[in-house]
Length: 263
Ligand SMILES: [Zn+2]
Image (cartoon, rainbow, N blue to C red):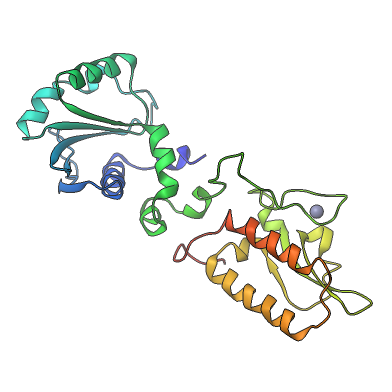
């Protein structure tokens, strides 16, 4: 999903990104990326007393796995920079040949850490928004549906004939929440496609799903719902149930504080 965003980074940006990711993983940075220069040294980092030489490879054009020829003399380079370990930080994978070579180096006590595209895709959702924002223009999209499929709970349009999942990326802009006041003056809390429910939302307050996924907006929306609860003694029996389901569902796509605002 965010592979394309990764491949749109320049090789230099890739090195800076690597620095941020390694810092996020608890490494201390001794020598950071040096722009333009490449003498086989990309970075030196340290964790738990072990210094690592970091090799960043960003085959963003070919998308080919890194091979043995792209990583010559690993052992020499590691020793030359007074390190005890080696970190492969690749936006692709490694060829079987290179993996064998790294395995051989591990067996002679070189501390080798392999971080490939798959690992990076797993790490990204754990990185804070303001860091991701340096590299990716729309980090909120990278935050979408982070949960394991098994844990994910859709939010179905309350129009029973529709039942579409409002949290699907393409559906978010067309989805809303609002209130319906029925003939007995009871207030209902509704969510659904705009086309399905907007006619039923006969109360002035309503919200876009794309809006309330931003935590700042959700807080505002929450106080509106509180206000409506306080002002109306007549709440429908399903008001709290719907409100609870809604909040629980939105949490799954919530954009954390400081990631930008809904426009
Ligand atoms: Zn619908």
